[in-house]
Image (cartoon, rainbow, N blue to C red; front, side, top):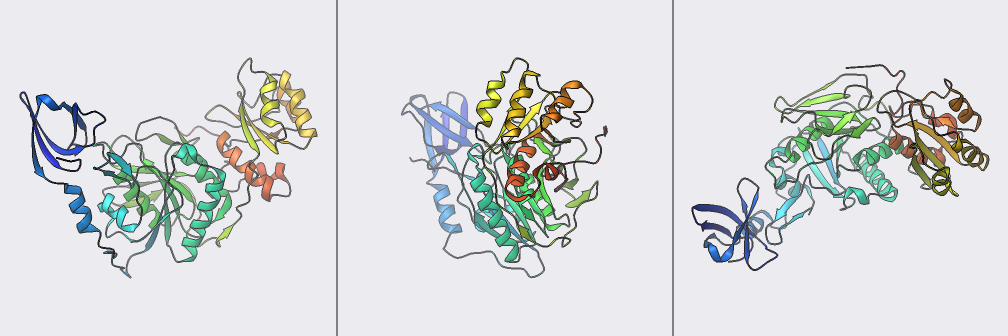
Length: 415
């Protein structure tokens, strides 16, 4: 009896059937049930019958013969699937108990068979990391990979990414790339071995969006807890607002840019967007990485800002309300801007925009050289400042100019 075997376990009046997983102790058996959940059973108190030996190794051997079984269909668009890590296209290795991310087109279709017949696929790995380990270097590698895939004829690109920092990477690509085709980020809040996993629906909806006509950087995730519609968020206006819900992502300040109906396989949009083929492919991937994001809270010493911005090329401040900090910070900000550090003010409020012309503190901040971040999300503002410092002649002007939908014309209630 070995991990990977399909077993039946009888204990008292309970019977469990599933795939044997590795156990960290010799006293317990761990079985993955067909429901997706795991159960641990005291080995000495259980009767175990092996129903099939190493069933997943047999399936793998049958599925993997060294040649691609995916046939090219000239009537279908070609979608490039790029992995940076995360769990959306991962499968469970029943010999180790780990979720693995071996990744090519066959792997993705094996993990998400519902994708078959929707497009021709190419698979590519840029990184295989947890999203909290994402870095600007990987953003640049990803931007190059996306550009190469589009140059090679991809009609759309789906980027599979961990959800925790997806919004930052989506913003980075929105600034670095002008794209003639859709670039759609998607991920999974719950891993593929869980019954409530959102990986299949998110992947299918992302492919449908990548086949459509919105040539922007989008984030495609569940719109609600139900398995019916995915929301399409503009990459520079989206925020992860819940740690674990499947509908964790929301567009800040308005409704999502569009939706994908999972059952009807229909894509609709709520607002104007860049159309497929409207822009020529272009890459500007230089980034100034010495940029920090600092959040002001009552009682925070200006020494925190001094330490964060020491020698930095730029700093984004997440201020209160209309974009304020304690007046004790203003002298430090003045010194920073005099030394050539770009200081951009955003708000920690979820809706609305910065306006430092209303109160005395705001006017003093403007006199100290602060650039108003309009209604940019603080994280988006940090990414944009990294890009602007490396690519723009006038950083202040560029930060206040909408480049990729990150700034809206007006902040108005929409619900």
